[in-house]
Image 1: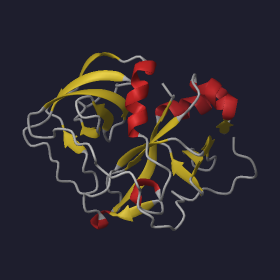
Image 2: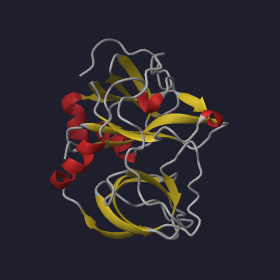
Image 3: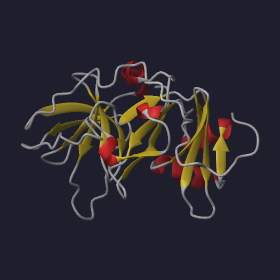
Length: 243
């Protein structure tokens, strides 16, 4: 648990070091050719994209799904899905090299028990060496990306996490330690927001957070957004159990 008074959040706060991540980025690659059929384990599902593990390669992939009007993204953690990529999967986004567009909605085929997912998750964990996603700060201009760094990563915080709701705007943030950094990220996870609502509290950590979530948080999924006013921002898109 983190202690001490909380300061106003800095959007991203990743120190100032430029040490590269030691784990080689994009070591495993999924088959993102047009028309490919993939079997995936879902980690997060938002309107912007669905992040999942490609079961064939073990790589993280970000799916752009064209959800019908009025159909909210409805995939849950550890759902198993099959998906066909579009003939042109649009894999040329240099800020999100793992992203691809689907031809249709993913087909739900089951759910993987959390314990079975443990090995898959453990294999993806980034080491706490250097700034998150390979660059310091909360965001970076879109034109600075060259397709050489991952845009999503699974981490185990070295301290925390603590979830906070900012009363002035109602947004949810997560505070956690990453190496020597005290990191604040905006949260785009409905589960985290619901946990604060259920607990009727604006700050949760430790046992209280585990109770509200229904599991002890172990992993955080950190992702880059699509460009917003020309910048891609670091956000937390999911909080996961150990498995």
